[in-house]
Amino acid sequence: MTVTIKLQQPDGSIIATFPGEDRQSIAQIAKTHGVEIPVSCGIGVCGVCKCKIVSWNQYVQIDKISLPMMPLERSAEGNFQEVFTCVGWISSEAIKDKEDHEVILEKNM
Image (cartoon, rainbow, N blue to C red; front, side):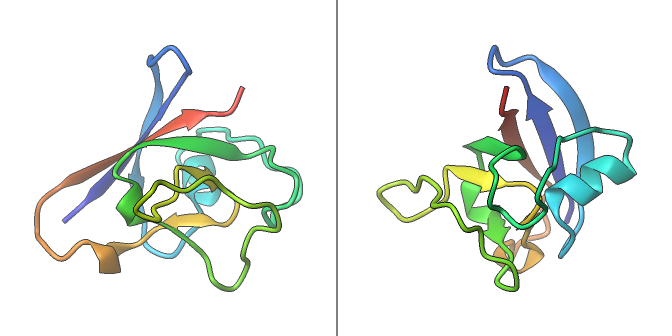
């Protein structure tokens, strides 16, 4: 099972693709793969790193050690529609099958 993270512009064009890794922040993973997601505070307060979750929001979790200080939009089902990438990560625990999955995030401009 692998999770691929795609980062896109508001117009839908893909900026970058990189693997999602369990228990690392999305911003950290992106940086490891040469993709720059701006981060300022690193604790989910400032909103600089916020991205819209375009697809597969049930796999994006918020680290319980460092909950964001600003509220994030949720769907009617309670799934996050946004993520602060400095404290957001991909949860492999939420994925029970052995298929490959994709998470698409829209970069905050």
